[in-house]
Image (cartoon, rainbow, N blue to C red):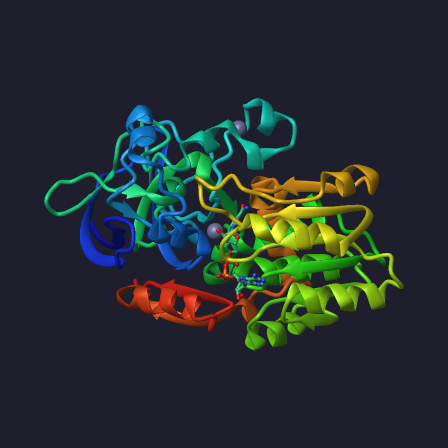
Length: 383
Ligand SMILES: NC(=O)c1ccc[n+]([C@@H]2O[C@H](COP(=O)([O-])OP(=O)(O)OC[C@H]3O[C@@H](n4cnc5c(N)ncnc54)[C@H](O)[C@@H]3O)[C@@H](O)[C@H]2O)c1
Ligand SMILES: [Zn+2]
Ligand SMILES: [Zn+2]
C-alpha cells in the first residue's frame, strides 16, 4: 500500500514528508493505522546526531541509520495481521511501546520488560522479525524506522512484540502519549526513584518527560516537588502537574531545597533535560542528601563519556546514581494501568499536548520544542 511518512536523511536535515510504499505484514507482524504521534525529544537526537553511531561502529554492526522514518510515541488500530500473529486481530486498538517486549527473555520473565532483549534492535531500523524493511521510498530505497516503530507515518508495520492492546473506549490520541513520554516520566519517579510519601523530589527539565515525572512524584505522595527549568512557561505548567515549587536554575533550586528541608536536602532528583550532559551530574548529586538517589532519564550524546562528580560524597553520604529506560516500567502492565488511571481522572494526559500539527508541518512542531513552546507537540493524521 501507499502511505505518507516523515523521513530523515541525515544529521542536521529537516524531516521530509513523502508518499512511501509499505509492504504487507510478514510473519509475526502487524499493519497499523496510526492516529498520530507525539514529538518526543529522542527523535531530535537523530537530527542533532547525538544518537547516531560513528560510521565504523555502524559498519561493524551492519547498520544503516539513514534514511529513516522517525517517531516512537503512537497508537492506532490494527488493520491486518501477518501469519502466526495470535494475540491481535484486525480492529484491535493498540499503543505502540517504544521498547518491544517478547515475554520470554530473562528480563521479561523477571518483570523487567523495559530491558527486553529485543531492545538490541532499537537502533537497527529494520523489522525485529527478520531484520529487513517493510517501508520503502518511491525509488525503492529501504527506510529505517525509529525504535522498531516509525510512528511519523499514517500507517506502519511493526512486530507483534511492540503492540500493547488496549480497551477500545480509550481515546487513541491520548493513549499514544503513554507509548513513551508518560510512562517514562511517571515511572522515573514511581519506579526508578521509588518516591515515597513525604519525600522531597527535584525534577530537572520539565518537558514531556519531566512533567510526567512531576505527576508521578506528586501521585506517590511527595511532600515537595521542585520543578527546575529555565523557561517560565514550563515552570508555570509544572504546577498544573503537581509541582509545589519551581526554580529557574540548579543554584536557585539548591538554596530552596536547603530551606525547605532544614538542610537535609532532597531524597530524590530526576534528570529529564532535553540533552543529557555530564556537567549536570554534580549539581544533581549535590541537591540530594544522605542516602538520596539521582535518576538519569535524559539521553546524552552516544559518544560522551565525561562526568565529574565527588566519589567521596557518593561513598560517605551513601548516595545512588541510576539510569532508567522507559521509566523502569513494564509496558504490558503499566500502559493499560496508566490508561485506567486516566479514565478515572487520576492521571493528566489532556494537559500534556500544547499543540497539534498536520504531518506536513512536523518541522514546525520540532522548532516549537527547541524554542521551549510545547510541553508535548503532536502530529495528527486525518484518515
Ligand atoms: N530514558 C528513556 O527511556 C527516555 C525516553 C524518552 C525520552 N528520553 C529523553 O528524555 C529527555 C527529555 O525528553 P523530552 O521529550 O521531555 O524533551 P523536551 O525538549 O520536551 O524537554 C526538555 C526540557 O528540559 C529543559 N532544560 C534544558 N536544559 C536544562 C537545564 N540545564 N536545566 C533545567 N532544565 C533544562 C528544557 O527547557 C525543556 O523544558 C531527552 O533527552 C529524551 O531523549 C529518555
Ligand atoms: Zn520518547
Ligand atoms: Zn523480552
